[in-house]
Length: 306
Ligand SMILES: Nc1ncnc2c1ncn2[C@@H]1O[C@H](COP(=O)(O)OP(=O)(O)OP(=O)(O)O)[C@@H](O)[C@H]1O
Image (tube, rainbow, N blue to C red; front, side, top):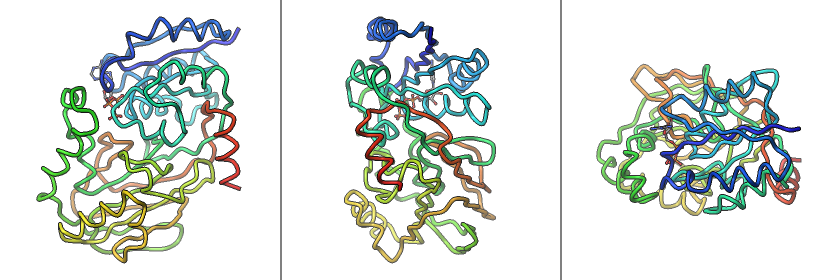
């Protein structure tokens, strides 16, 4: 019999998952999985729980939470020789990774159906120094926004909490002097932010990296060069429509390996969580993890990456 482990964060998003847990377990059992679950208790706990699931050779690990929880689970799978298939139940605030995979929104049981009736699709993941990410790595003052929003505020306000915090942070955004080496090329200069992205869906912006592909072995890298606040807001607005990539202050390119150095203090953001200080080396791990999606979605993604 196949075995599934559900790792869920009871504090994610609007804290609704626990109520649905009995139905989730029944559906998984009906689909032939002997299922058990683990509720995370603190930061880092989902990584440890995923490591245990690897050791115990579970067939399927389901991450139920926001992007932070999915990131932690993937960090537990890391570069282990045996990696269970990953299922996602998005119950966070932003759910960028789930959006990139085309998973049903606000419907926990429909996501369970994708896991039990769908197909595994190989996706690239990123390694940043000795940590992993599924969606995005980045640096620059504004990226700190994603973990400065208090959890309680997200529970009450959802996505709006990020926008409010963003406006509050605008005046404190400063450029940083960096050197970025990518696939044999070098950029040197002052930047507002850099992003190394695996999916097209970041911070709720669905067109931030419009050419990204989930399993081509390449990151989409975005560098926003030094800009004043007015230009910054203008470019952020363009980013909602995916038009920022044409702006002369933006560099948008594909790369498999990226190194970022700076003499200043710059924080690293991994999937919306604090990931330590730069320097950083980012490596794309080609089709490293299998994640459950619908058959149509897999077809679409595989066609795109031909
Ligand atoms: N029991 C717990 N109490 C407090 N924090 C927890 C607990 N379990 C996990 N966490 C932490 O909660 C953080 C945020 O979780 P998660 O990303 O799942 O939800 P979210 O913040 O609502 O959604 P999003 O990341 O989509 O905005 C993670 O960094 C995780 O380590």
